[in-house]
Image (cartoon, rainbow, N blue to C red; front, side, top):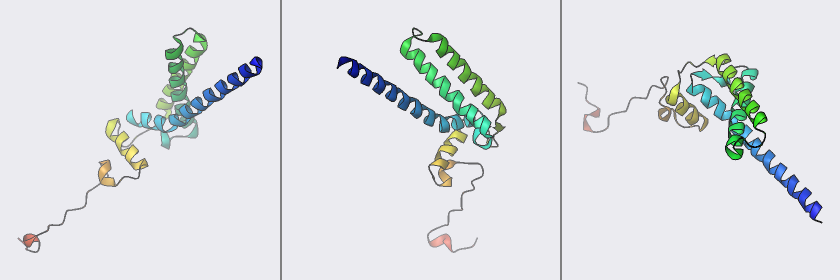
Length: 146
């Protein structure tokens, strides 16, 4: 029947929306750590409450900004604005409460963290703690002492 088809379509739409929200939430976990690191904060070394604030802050901010972009404030703008404000507040609190990074911040720290997650060799990460091994000399002058 037509009514059954509408109910099935509505359920499929809700399921797809939940899957997208779950994917954004899962993406927010590493993204919040990288965003904190780029601002000189170590979210991953902080308490579980601070980590949760960071993830929820990024998730709510991104989700509500997406809603505003899609619906142009026409549908549920009050709820969307509230979600955006909550996300911004959680993000602010997470950044204020997170421990300071010993590596400083900015792009180099983020680059090092991404490469560490990817198990890249230390020489690719360009960390201050990495001291490259000396390169042995090759050729006829390698054995001579000066």
